[in-house]
Image (cartoon, rainbow, N blue to C red; front, top):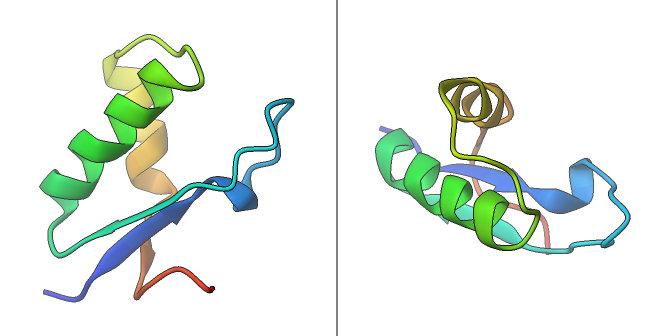
Length: 64
């Protein structure tokens, strides 16, 4: 399985977050992304949030 990532810089927000997360599995990345979204961006952990985050995953590693 190829490495996947999600990068807050691709989704500008008021907080101007620059965090990028990557993992070898979708499950691991999803858990890290949900924790970040809840703790930093104050989202609620819902099935809809998880679905939205998963749809934003990209193959590879985030750009520097």
